[in-house]
Length: 306
Image (cartoon, rainbow, N blue to C red):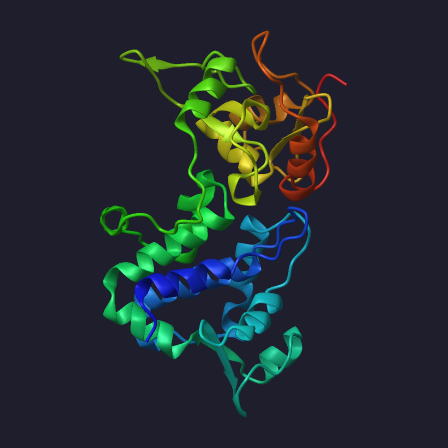
């Protein structure tokens, strides 16, 4: 039976399909969803496609790439790794194909493969480490808590810390670069100008990657922005973006529910950035282009002052 580290290596290999940094987070999201169901239901956690199609589709819509995606893709294609995922139908084992209709009509049901389920039962910390690995390798950190809530995962961060590093190949962020990014923008949000201190320490502002760390985004000022917690989340969700001229864009798909949302989000459309201060690197166009094509949702609103 594979060791815990070997299971983590295998799960870490189930990365989202990527070509030139293009995002397609189908398989990691399905695995996280399956881990959440296993955590709640144990061995009984069989996932009938017709019953989870809507939920899985919403996960892909909310946390997948900007282009339309289908729940059929990961459900069928994850079966190419039989040590991780298995599918059976009313007629027996094996996926009937990648079409939604045949998956529904055949009663296709998937779940984590038997060996993986045994490993999860034998090693209590494996589920936490596996989920954290999938999150770290495939999604921006600001989205992790939202994804866990959406899939029903309750991660025990204490267990994760006790078990040590997840994988040697996961790159580590440089804290010095984080400080450099914050200093470049004078500890103020580049979108709204917010800056706050508590007992001499900045609070509510964060160093954000433009091209995500999980997709080869480097730790450098030219790939960073100082953003408040709200605008960091909205930037990583694709509500906010940037033009080549480094003016703020707001997705037309964002619906502002009230004056506060209009003032804090919609009114940003067309504005320039706060900073960086003279002598600091501005965000590089290549990273802006990646965010525009891989994260930003749909078309941009017309600038308010246009």
